[in-house]
Length: 309
Ligand SMILES: NC(=O)c1ccc[n+]([C@@H]2O[C@H](COP(=O)([O-])OP(=O)(O)OC[C@H]3O[C@@H](n4cnc5c(N)ncnc54)[C@H](OP(=O)(O)O)[C@@H]3O)[C@@H](O)[C@H]2O)c1
Image 1: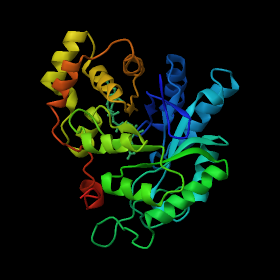
Image 2 (image 1 turned 30 degrees about the vertical axis):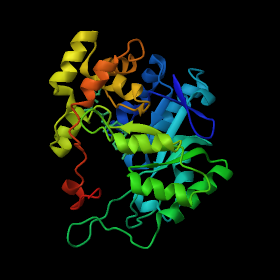
Image 3 (image 1 turned 90 degrees about the vertical axis):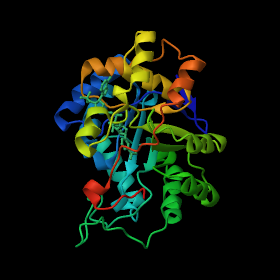
Image 4 (image 1 turned 135 degrees about the vertical axis):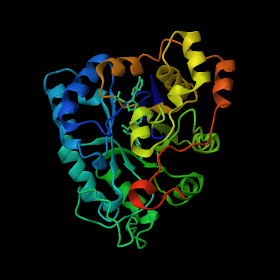
């Protein structure tokens, strides 16, 4: 299953996110994911494993496991490279061993101190706060992103972590409308207004952190996971599915693309097996009622500042 983007390209509704995937595990996980049926992979320069993803993709293509044209590869421009969009995209392509990206996203709507293309540092100032660059506008960054399409380096371009105001602004200054807004959304952080606004304006929404980050975000940010929610547990029992599958199915039924990450083979299979059942309207209403408007990404812990603040 796929969603048609506003430029006609199709994006598979389930992708595999590779953030916090150990470099040494990446090749095996990606090759197995392709065997399971995944065709969409969500990467980023910031994840520091693009080279390993590239090795896996090259092997999959060279051995005939999959054709390049059947894959959908996303990667992202890191904040420290906002002033170096073309070079950063070319560097990602080199790491990924690709000659074009299916989707290139502005990772975060904030520029930070440049430290060299692809280094993706998040430099802190003397007060321990993220060193934010206030000279670069998002409009300038977006026009450089638009060049990538005419250069043939990215088929689609998009934004990530843009709220409703910033998304609206991007629509106003863009010559090429963003195809996608990739945002944190899961049963505890539903963001109905932003999702509705994006859909109304032809912007596809990709749900990052679709499992609420589960154990990983509890460990990193001390956040609460929706996978322990009693309503979701009840629905899992009813449908003979796991709570993760219920959360992902909910994401798909609200027309968002889901990109769960797992480093466990069994879970790669589990997370992909969400197209053989349907949640009823009542199930969807029940999930609607558990929204906590709860963002799991608490950036202050690492950057001394809540960038969503
Ligand atoms: N644009 C952005 O700013 C942004 C931010 C965050 C994430 N992302 C993208 O979104 C992807 C997914 O987000 P995420 O990795 O942060 O969070 P997530 O996919 O919501 O959750 C990942 C966590 O869930 C566990 N998990 C996976 N499948 C499971 C299952 N079936 N049952 C129970 N636990 C399960 C994983 O552990 P195991 O690995 O041990 O299975 C890991 O701890 C990322 O990889 C990245 O590509 C983008």
